[in-house]
Length: 252
Ligand code: IP8
Image 1 (cartoon, rainbow, N blue to C red):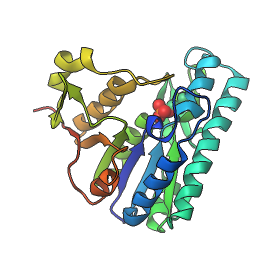
Image 2: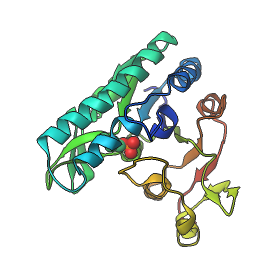
Image 3: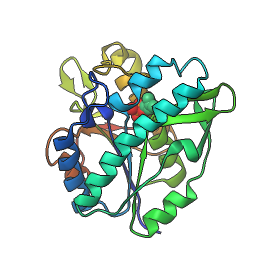
C-alpha cells in the first residue's frame, strides 16, 4: 500500500471569508502547483470558507434540519471543490472529487460511519482524492456539518498516515505572540483563552476546534502539524516531510 499523507487547506486560505463565494484563485493555483510537485500518496481535504459557512449560518444548520439548507450549502461547497480540482488538474496532478455528503454519516455531529475504501483505492491508483467540509446526514438530528478538520482526524485515525498537516492562514498555534513549536493537551487550559476565532463567518470552531480535533487524534497516537499555507513553499516542505509550524503531540 502507498504511504499516505493527509493535507488540509483551510477555507481562510482558499477564499475571502468575509465575501460570499469569493475564491482566491491565485492562492488556489499556487497551492495546486505546490501539491502537484509532491502529491504522491496524498489525500487532500479543504475547508469551505465563504462557500459553505455563510449558507450554513443562514439556515442555522448546526441547530436544525433544513432540506433547503442542506442542498444550498452542499452545492456551494461543491462549487469550491470544482475550482480546487480543476486547478490541481491544470497543475498536472490527478485529482478526483469526493463529496462527504455521499459517503459519511454523523451521529450528534460526529462521524459515525464513513466509506474510506474507495479513497484508499484512489490513492493506490495514483489519484488525489479531494474531500471538503460539507453537510452530512446525521442519525440524531437529520443533518449537520462535518468540518474538514473532523474529516482529517477521522481519516488519519483510520489510515494511520505518514504525514497529517493542517494549512491555515496563521503560522501555527500562537500563544503570547509566539508560535508554539509543539503543543500537548496539558497546555490547553493555559493557552485556550488566547486561541483566535477565524476571520469572517465560521460555524465549526476556528483554531480551538482545530486543536481539539488534533489533540484527540494525538491521543490515538497520530501526530500532526498546523502551519501557514499562505507562505509560498510551506506546503512543499510539509509534503517532503519537514517539520513546519506547530506539532500537535500526544500526552506525556
Ligand atoms: O470549513 C465546514 O467545513 P470547514 C463545512 O472545514 C460547511 O470547517 C458546510 C460549513
